[in-house]
Amino acid sequence: MAYNLELDIAINAVVKASRLCRDVQNSLISMDTVEKKDRSPVTIADLGSQAVINLELLKSFPHDPIVSEEDTDALDSHEYLRGKVLELVSVQIDHVNEAQILEAIDYGTREIDYRSRFWTVDPIDGTKGFLRGEQYAIALALVEDGQVVLGVLGCPNFPLNYERPEDGKGCLFFAIKENGAFMQGLDQDKREAIHVDFISHPSEARFAEPVEKAHASHTAHAQISSALGITTPPYRIDSQCKYAAVARGDVSIYLRLPKDKSYQEKIWDHAAGSLIVNEAGGRVTDIHGQSLDFSKGRRLQSNEGVVATNGRLHEKVLNVISNPRNSEKVIKQ
Ligand code: AMP
Ligand code: MG
Image 1: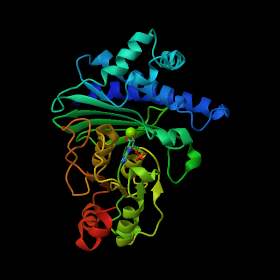
Image 2 (image 1 turned 180 degrees about the vertical axis):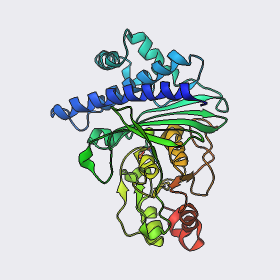
Image 3 (image 1 turned 30 degrees about the vertical axis):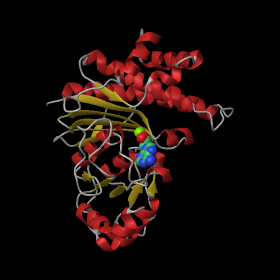
């Protein structure tokens, strides 16, 4: 199958990065001395995760461009943090030194041709969730001609089963274009195909939205969901775990209407998740029904907001968003 090698390398990279993030989070939980305002745990996990992914990708695909969120600025003149990142990365990758780590992190900041083949990485998507000990994701995708062809999401705190949280947590989701979407436990090899739900009456649906009020308009979402007759409260979780929730049928809709109309979404916040939903039988567009165009740079410049659904509900949701009766209230949030 096309992209099989890429998938193996990507899964290995995301699993290692997820373990690194979990190590930091475990030490965070045991250190009650860490102040809530202290961003250093997220800094070292973010940069460590990006280093692991970029190093693993470059080992196998030394000529592929990588677009990743972070740079090494936060490590300049912070010897302690650099030492911590080296310590964390060395647990996952043998024989690596500080210079190689810094180079790998900054490899992701180079300017590239976005119409060519490139990888995009969000080393910790949902840093606020990470700090709260809630949901976050490690996201990696391969883009060709502006379209995502492979996506992997590591979700260390995501329940293996939505209905049965007691079954444990830690999931890996992945998809290759036109080959379906799959899930496995982060510490297991057994994969299973996943599918969106089959709900076609909007009133039976549940929708997901960001926890952070600044990242999307909760008010607009409340108006849309009420117009759709949805009565179940929103599923508020951080990161691309929301895409995973739609892809696995935990919820039927993910709404991300911009709070600030000038905000352009970043490619690494949507590449992996959107492919996984599409491949699980769902649909992802912006709020105008346009498909997401990943060829425009580090941001989705030609798109506004995001709507992901189980497919059956997509037109209904878009209609409510664009219906003039609602649009004044809904879009101007
Ligand atoms: P979520 O966990 O769904 O809230 O998404 C987290 C992502 O939101 C982060 O990775 C940021 O890149 C992105 N983000 C930051 N500011 C905004 C904003 N004003 N609107 C939408 N997304 C944002
Ligand atoms: Mg992100």
